[in-house]
Amino acid sequence: MPPRPFHVLPQRAGFGLKPEHYADVLAAAERASLPAWAEVHPQNYFGAGGPPHRWLTAIADHLPLSFHSVGLSIGSAAGVDVTELDALALLCDRYDPAMVSDHLSWSNGPNDKFPDLLPIAYSHAALDHFVHEVGRVQDRLRRAMLIENPSRYLAYAGDDWDEVDFLHELCRRAGCGLLLDINNVEVSAFNLGRDPARWLDAFDPALVGEVHVAGHSRKDDDVGETIAIDDHGSAVGQSCWDLLATFLRRSGPKPVLVEWDSDIPDYAVLMAEVAKADAMLTSELADA
Image (tube, one colour):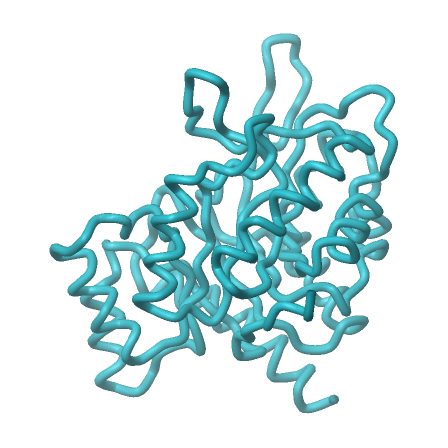
């Protein structure tokens, strides 16, 4: 089979589009002061029409879009959620996004659909499963996709693969790319007692088609231990910015998304975060 085409995003900073900011985005478009691209969760636009599509259609006239799916449940034992995949394919036909991605996770059981991205074991069987199911998704969408590294709170005992090696092998065998979430690296490293800088350094930049940064929180659990929570509910932490800068020095410019999905800030606050990321990328582009 010939390689599937990769669509590409601008190597600049983007933002997560939220309904709270629709009017601000179009006003910024009139001033020609928009960031380079926007990410949307396609499940929010699976309806046939209505206000969400009117807004998104207007905004898509000004910005490339990245579809970051949260519902394919690629890791489920029964395979990818076909209803979700069909709806995603129709939405891709409608808007022709510059990129499509989903997660190294599962959400569907035999009789339930969980509102979460649940972890997988890094086993040989899980790798075979993901290679097959990512291939199904890419065949249906007629394009290559990105798979995001997860945020982890616990590790399975007896994994066959290290997470990074698992993702690299998945890319090699399935022909997909990586969505590298640096905040997820930081969260996972904290919870599992590992060094986030060494974890991040193991990723092959050549496989990375998009990078995410975000804020997270830290809370004490029932036994008094502190855990990092991937809530995307605050500004990007300085440690995450530092990790991004380190990665970009190694990789060169990449599309970088600022995620802020809960406790949504004012548009100006979000744009200040995007400007920080764009300043890093502008510096890397100048040095390239």
